[in-house]
Image: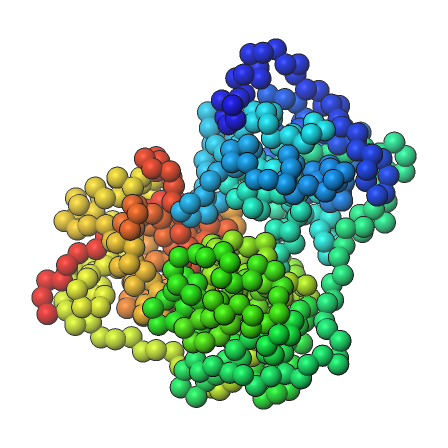
Amino acid sequence: MRGGGVLLLVVATGCPEGRGDDMQRIDWHPDGVFSIDRYEFPNQIGQFPTHGVTLQEAVEACAEAGKHLCTATEWRAACRGPEGRRWPWGDRPIPDICRLEVDAGGHTSLVDQGANEDGKLSGVAASGAYRDCSTPEGVHDLAGNLEEWVQDDWLGRSGSLEGGAWYTRQSYADCSGDYSRSPDYRLEVDQPVGSAGFRCCTRAEGGVTAALVAADAHARRVLPAAEGPAPGTDEVPIGEDRWMDRMPWPNVQGALPQLGATWTEAGALCGAVGKRLCTAAEWEQACAGPDGLAFPYGNRHVPSACPAAVSASGTFFACESPAGALDMIGGGWEWTATPLAMAGLQGGRGPLVEIRGGGSADDPHKARCRPEDGYPAVPMDQSHPALRFRCCRGPLPPVPAPVPPAHRCPEGMRALGTSVCVDALEHPNVGGGLPTGGLSAAEAVSACASAGKRLCTTDEWLAACGGTTGRRWPTGDTWTGGCFVQDGAQGPRPSGAGDCVSPDGVLDLAGNLWEWTEGPGGPELRGGGWLLGAGLAQCRARAVPPEGAEGRAEWGARCCAEPVGP
């Protein structure tokens, strides 16, 4: 038996309680023998592990226990074992073996998980509750439950997280660390991470040296040799007098894409041939086409259609977009020309720039024409072995003018298209007052019905937020800061208090409160909430809580209705 019920079995059968010094010896690490805690801190079976800590707090807790916070190489050595397995238990995925949620309809990390009766995050299980979530050597919960702090990241900087949390997909929650090495991976080590825990290590001699911490660093520069192929001229049209390279630079069929260029270097290479980097909006439109496809080839994910790893350009013809571009998804992220001036994400790492496409460690929620979750942006001066680029040519696309409505709406509502009206503000649609939070899906439906309206469908909501072009934010394709998201925010701001206004005059569609909609498969939440990490106030942010879930403080609603006249 696997799953949450195992905890009772472990306790009832009289298994001895783990002690804080219960450790496993690892003698296959290339830099010497060490020992690692069998369970997440405080390393006691049956107890809830410590979470919500900063990197420094994890370091200090291990030091107080006479140990050290594990380095990345130590953590991975314990997880992968002497044979180099992918997951703690082996190389074959096993459903439900660890505390991991199967996510079929939206990234659960986008939604506040709340706390259980013990004050712990509701997604966290007690240490050892998933008995089979163990390495053959006896180290438990390395995958799922809590993601775990380690001392260093692959760039040699302080701090990273390994193993994934309870909301992480199993393809990410493995021993490789590939997910935390992705260029879009966002982490600020001086802020507490609610889903982050840790475990400690010890060494009989020498302790942790600078060489050991640096041992996990990978080569940062993977630019090909200067004698590589000359840039190709194969282009596809993406608008009036505008073209895009059919393949990633150097845009030569059969050649490997150039990886590792910084944003400045990529822009300079495009400029040298009379081109420029593509904007994020151009990239998305060339990928999704006029029908707004999820993937270049359609709306149903086909894993083999696009490259999963770095591959020769132009060899996956099933990955062709409606515009005729190849390799836009999979195989590597691509730089765009669009900045993301979102201060809460920068963390002192320099200006951020949007990236698109997804690499080998990314799933179809991110490796798609318009990513639904994650943080697809990278500091412009960062070189990364999974970043490539392609060029565009021609004038920047104009901003489309709003189309005047063709019908009249009830007071306090705005017209969409030809047949729908939407509340200008979040329920109860009153300017200056706080919007109604804490709504379950059923309560959202009831709230709109009580106002003589109905809950908006997802398509209606997306039309209000993203318009006909699929804007990333209600205000446009470039972040302006008008929609309310904030680190550490404790609640929404009053309706209409900011500049989060769509061209049609609809306010607060993204950020502030998540808004319930009637999706094709049932109720779903759209638009992100007041917390910075909850969707980044994107129109495309989507989350699907469990059916019948009680309302959370950041869940609200917006109502729709039919027109009252032409």
